[in-house]
Image (tube, rainbow, N blue to C red):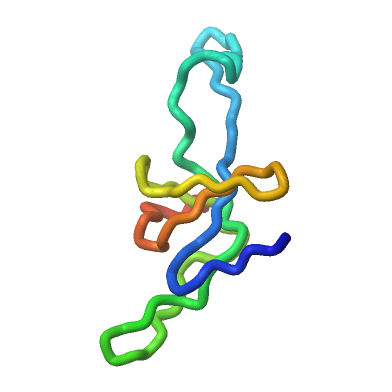
Length: 96
């Protein structure tokens, strides 16, 4: 199923990373830790409308790796895959 978000919403797939201690021990996913706030942009909307009605283009693009606000995204599950839905303003930075 293809997702096409509206306005300035974006769909992000969370990037899971193995956490390793300084001594080289890989921590399993089963321990109680916070979910990472990094993800890859999967789909974007057309942009937000300004007060004049002009469309403000999106700054993020599909494939961008982004950092986002901790409590901003809504989690959805489609076809067994977990995705995050957030607005472009919830993105803190694009990772290069």
